[in-house]
Amino acid sequence: MNVLFIGSSGALSLAPFKKLLSLQHSITAVGVIKPIVFKNKIIALENESLALAANQQNIPLIDLSQPINDVVEQCKNISIDVILMSCYSKRLPDEVINLASKGCFNMHPSLLPQYRGPEPIFWQMKEASELGVSWHRVVHAFDAGDIVAQQKVNMDEGASYSEINQMLANTGAELMMAMLSRLSANRCTGTLQNPELASYFPYPEEQDFIVETSWAAQHAYNFMRATRDFGLPYPCQIGLHRYLLKEALDYDNNDTLEAAEVKGERLYIPCNDGVLIATYTVKLY
Image 1 (cartoon, one colour):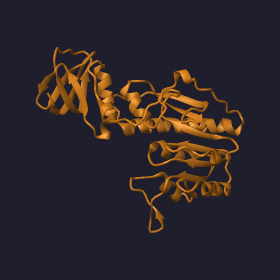
Image 2 (tube, helix red, strand yellow):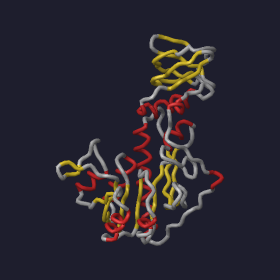
Image 3 (cartoon, one colour):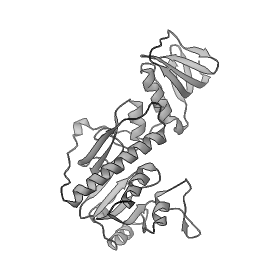
Image 4 (cartoon, helix red, strand yellow):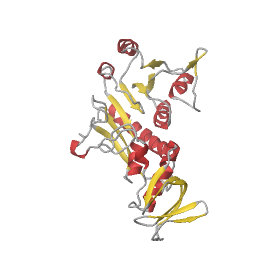
């Protein structure tokens, strides 16, 4: 099948793209927002980008920031059986979606219909929920189309954001292979998302990094480890005192404390279940 692949930088786009290169399907073009060009060459400001990876494979690029008529005209000049999207934050116009004879599908790093929105990994870690990845048909509403593939993913303790991202991306890429096989055989059916089970979360803000002592210490540890790359402090109210936590170092589910204890640079925080060990930048009061 001929694939138009749409995405951005990062593992959630690159892992399925690279998996596609190893399959019998043809990537006829890659769609991105404003590829970075320097002296007539595609470059990447990070270690890698989807635009650069496509350029290195001599795959045509479509700049989706162009006027819609120009985008549609470019798409009409290539053969498109299916559109695959991953880590693309814009709404794809219906005029483009309708060009794919076998449909348009998006990979989302959560177990839909839960955690719709632009930053689902953060909120899954914030709420200590099961992690997973879904492929769904693209409809006008974000992340709301029929689910055609889905899988839970187990993470290691203290996994970083990039490690979680990569694991979900790799799982999503494997799901994509099976999905494409079903599409080729015209056997790709979907499951309606239950709107009563749906949840949507926006980009996190500073107040969303609050760590609660009502959580289990393990929950707080994994949340802080997963989100530390955001570079924001973690406000934490411990009894009458409020601290700005910096980094989670460890936790002990078998320990209990009546009150917080400071030992050198370490703060021992009593949680609902166990003790969190973290560094902090300041005691506010």
